[in-house]
Length: 368
Image 1 (cartoon, rainbow, N blue to C red):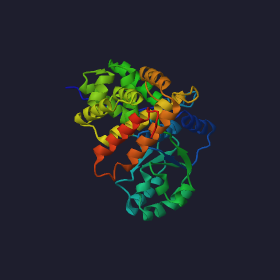
Image 2 (image 1 turned 30 degrees about the vertical axis):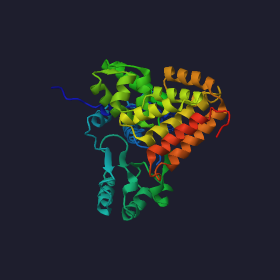
Image 3 (image 1 turned 30 degrees about the horizontal axis):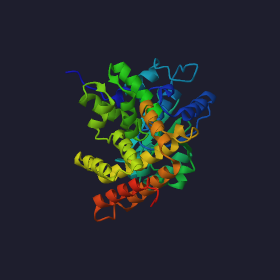
Image 4 (image 1 turned 60 degrees about the vertical axis):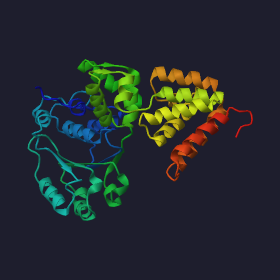
């Protein structure tokens, strides 16, 4: 049996150009390489799965490349690049601070720093989850970080910048990574699907991208899961079934019932949702997001804030035309208040049902 390689590893970017969703940041790093103005210490901050460690590795490989390309990318052909790609490079050292966070671990790293690179120009030390270092370890690291040898470069990555000591922050160039946009995630998944011969629907990939919450690594893991479960046919229905995601259609039907003041059908739809195993709070949170999406569809200026597939976007546009802004704002306020009160409620189902009843009453001339 052929060994399966997960997409997050198989399609991990190897050049700045292939990094997803961080164009300004990769452009800045390439400019620094082009001008030769490299700092001795960098801090890459941002949510999980957005490319911090990947960019650190690409940066380390590129500055050691013996024959960089015209656009300042690594050539992947010189001995330094080959050593890096084959994971045998002695120039690039990685330390996981989550499990190596003591003073002794940092002292061992400092000892390594004294050894100059054998091939290439720099010894690069990538410290992942640097916020996990103990205070004593941070203090032991300070002097080396401030006055390292000319050939040493430190790249630290963290998801929690506020936990890094100010004395460390002041010695670093800080780069903030953004969450990856849904459209960028969908494009990357489409590219991978095309290479792997997997059939996809844009609506299904959009749901995966939303579920990933801006993390490309999470999106690829979910994509692999759905691909296996669906037999290589990633449709919208397969995605929501495998990920246990509530179908948009429930929310569209509910808003139609709210507009018509149809209490009984609204309660029956909610009962159907609960019978499928969905949490009531998850449902009410999704309904709140649905009102928000309808509201942004009311104005052409804000419609770009809607991050869904093209087919779903058309559904939102059509329903938004049938609802006035006052109704949507009040609906948003009611669902948000229900979400806030949910945890403290002793009868959670009744709380949600009362909210649905009040939403149906919004269409009444008397208004609540």
